Image (tube, rainbow, N blue to C red; front, side, top):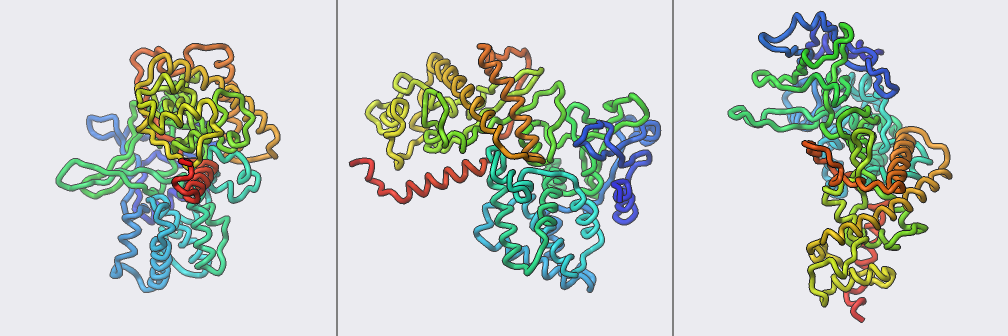
Length: 514
């Protein structure tokens, strides 16, 4: 069944209103990852403009046709609104969801997206066991989620042994832990289930969730957003440069609306693709981890959070001014990454990001830098770490607040130069290490190829002695850099931190005083 047939089904059975001239067809972007998209015939859409406006309401979707945590919990707790044939199914679904949420080991993984994953995963298992659910729920699971062609790293590592063994520094460690816990839970409470189906559910939910506005209070203009699966609306593709539509809600009916601005439509022909923005900030690793694709390069800024491979640091072999960088970052609980700014076919390191200053710490000339008491434990540790990191006791807790002294401009320049030397060594070693990785496919392969191309450019810029590698030196007038969210900790970093915490917990507190 094609996606247009899916849209037609929702229009007939769920009250979703699709404006005349709007269809689901192959994306006009014509890129391998674009797939289907929402296409509008502009000659038809002109007839449906709102009065004195360039806007057209192209979709109207009742809340009852969507899936959010609030809607799911409301339905599960409503014992009156149910037909007889679904009573047993609903009881079983509610029981299993309750079992998962009641387990304290799962509490740190509870989020709106993960609850939707748990919900649809249990529904898929119960359907396979012969239980029945409402038509809308069953249809969305079978015809949308399980047919979503989006491969994301968090599921590919459970399907591909090569992917699970390599390239973990760009993977979402917490989400992988959640998937492991979820599969373990299912194996404990169900006699049999199809793991590949569950992984497809996870990919479908993660890649299709949208942040939809909701009215916070009927007496105010305040809104909040909730993570929601919205049939038909989730066929719309992302492009921040070509964005010509946005979500809205009808305050009277609470319907979700998709509003198209005809003035922002590309008019090369009567056909135009409708685009929304999944996120105003395009961090490429996040997009691959969430949606399974890289957004197209455009005139707007993009980011690449360059996560440093903890495994590579642990194996050594890097020539740099501080031979135990991993240990230093781990002691201070710093997740090692640099925010790269991609703009106008150039790469900059964003040194206006506070995390970059943390990354510079092991490259600083500490003795001259910190406005601190030379007799303090922290001061001695930092000075010792610079000259001989191997002798620093593993039990020592370094407080970042204790080293938040004034950093001189001279010290900062020295640290930046040393860090660039480290980056050159790191990039060379990383690219060489990836040559021996077995053939790998899917999203992690795409991440590997993209990282390699960016690092080659960055390495060339460093070796050419380009003095404007840092964003503070970019000299782009009247340009304010948007705030880019940090990456999620990688599995290798989480594992390293667990080992350090266990090591510290097992050593007497007074050991380093002897």
